Amino acid sequence: MCGINGIIHFNQSLPLAKQVIHAMNESLKHRGPDAAGSYISDSIALGHQRLSIIDTSENSNQPMFSSSEKTVIVFNGEIYNYKELRDELKHLYIFKTLSDTEAILALYETQGENAFEKLAGMFAFILFDIEKQIVYLVRDRFGMKPLYYGNSNEVIYASSEMRALLETNVFSNKLNTDVLSEYVSTQTVHFPNTIIEDIYVLEPGHYLKIDKNQNSKKCYYEIETEHSFGSKIEFQNQLKESLSLSVEQHLRSDVNYGAFLSGGIDSSLLVGLMSEISESPIQTFTISFEEDAFNESEFAQLIAKKWNTNHHEVVLKATDFLNKIPEAIHAMDHPSGDGPNTFVVTEAAKNSGLTVAISGLGGDELFAGYPVFKHLSQIKSQLPFTLPKPIRSVMSAAYKQFNKSEVGRRKSDMLRYGASNLKGCYNTMRTVWDPKIILKNQSQPAAIPHIDEAFLDAKRLITSVSRSEIYGYMHDILLRDSDQMSMANAFETRVPFLDHRVVNCAMRIPDELKFPHTPKQFLTETFSHILPSEIVNRPKMGFTLPWNIWMRNELKSFCEEGIAILCKTSYFKNEALLKAWNSFKNGDQNKPFTSFWHLVVLGHWIKNNHIQCL
Image 1 (cartoon, helix red, strand yellow):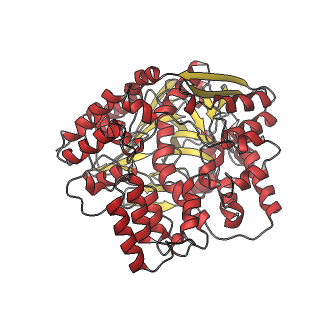
Image 2: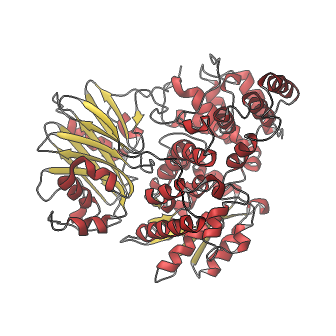
Image 3: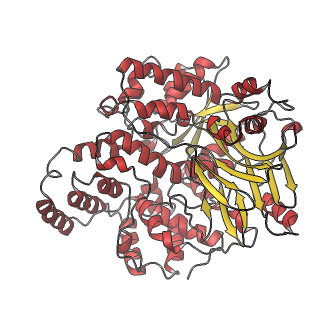
C-alpha cells in the first residue's frame, strides 16, 4: 500500500517537474512512510511513497524498473495472485525481487495490455513503456484503490489523492458546483467526477492509455448480471471455492495482519475462514461503546472465543471520539457521509503493531444484506405500488401533504414511481435530501448515476441492485473512505469479498437463491459450518456509531460549526438548512443524522482545505 504520483508531459518541457513531483510525494507521506522515490525523464515524472507489505527489502522500492529496463512503474495496492503469476512467467522473465509489483511488470512485458485483466487484487498504478513511449493509468475492477487525474495545458497529472494534485498549483481549489446537488442528496460525488473542479477519478475496471498523439480510455472489466444455470449445491460449492481461495491469497503478507471483527455475518465468516487457514491465532479488533444500545462487543467476543483469536477491544466514549473528529476530517481527501469509524479502528490496530487487516466490506452488496434489496422486491409486486399511475400520483401528493418527514418524502416519491419504475424507487431509497429544499438554483432532484439498466426489466432485480450498490454507494463512499481513513494511519485494509472471482460467482447465483428471506441467507447456509446461529440471527449493526446521540450532545458545537460554514457560501438556502438542523438538534425524528453528517463534514472539509466558494 502506497501513494503514487505522475506527471505526463510528452509534448512540452517541464523544467520544474522534479520539484513538483517531490511536493506531490511530500503530501502523500502518510500513505507510505517507509520509503520514497522518483523517476524523471524528458516526458514523464513519477513519484512514490511506500508502505512495505510484501518483500519489505529495499530491492522492492519504487519507482521499479523491469529487468529489461524497458518499463517502469509506480504501484499502490496488492496483487493477491502474484505468486501464481510469478510461477507462470518465471521461464519468460528474469525476476530480481520477490515483490508483487514486479509481477505486474513481468506480465506487461510478456502480454502487453492483456496483462491488466489477469491481475487479482486492489490496485492503482502508473506504468511507463519507455521503449514505446506509452503511459498507462490503471485501476482495479471495483475501485478499491483511488487514482485521481486532471489535464492542464496538455499535461496530465495523476495521484492517489486530490490534495497531491492541488500541490502542483495548476488546478484551482474551487468547489465543483455542478455536482453539489449530487453530494447533498447522496452524501458523495460519483465517479468520474469529484468535489473539486477539473479533477476526476479513473473509473473502476478501466485504464487510460496516453502517448504523444492521443489519450484513450478502455474498460477491461465490467460486472456481468446475466443469468446462469445450475443447482443450489453447485453454486454453493463455487462460492466456497472462490471465497476460500480469496481469503487464502489475502493473507499473503510479510508484516503482521489481523481482522476487523464486528460480530456480524461477514466479518465473523472471514475470521472463521482465516482461522482455518492460519497456523497461528488470528488477531481481531472491534469497537465497543459505553452506550449499551450500540454495543455489540458480546457478538465479537463469541466469535473470538470460538476461533481462539487474539482479540482486542477498543472502548469508545463520546469524548474520545470527539477528540478524534478533527484529525479524521483532516485526513479526508474527499468528503462524504462516512469514514471516522474506520479512522478510529485502524489507528487502534496500527498502535497495536498491525499494518494489515481483513474487512468484511462487500458481503452486504453481494448477498442482499441491505434493506433496499427486500424493499425493492416488495415494491415490484405489492399494492399500492402496482396500481395505475393516476391513482398513485394522487396518493403520492396526499402522502407528501400529510407526512413531512424524510420517510414521508421517500414514500411519496416511491408511490409516484411505482413498480413500473424500480430505478426511480432505488434512486429515492439511496438519497437523503431532495436538494432543491436546501440548495439554491435547484429545480430537479439529483439522480444517482451508474444505476444498472437491468432495473428496466426487473428480471434479475437482486443482482441489479448488487451491481448498482457496488458501483455507487460502495465505490463512492465505503471504499473511498476505507482507503483514505486507513491510509491516514499508514494502514492497509483488505476486502476478500471483492476478489473478482467471488463477485463473478455471486453475480451468477439466481435471484431466487439470494432473496433475503433471512439476512444473507445464501451466504449463511453455504457456510453454516462456520457461522454460529447466534451470529446469523442477531440484529444487523456493523461498526455503527451512536450519531443521533452524539450529534445532539457532545458533537453539537462541532456540527454547528460545519453547518455555519455552509451558510457562509452562496449555495445554500440558509433559512431552510438552519430550520432543518435546529429541528434535528431539538429531537425531531423526521430527519435522521444521515441527512446532516455529510453536510457537517463538507463544511469542515471546505475550511480545512481552503476550498474556494462563492
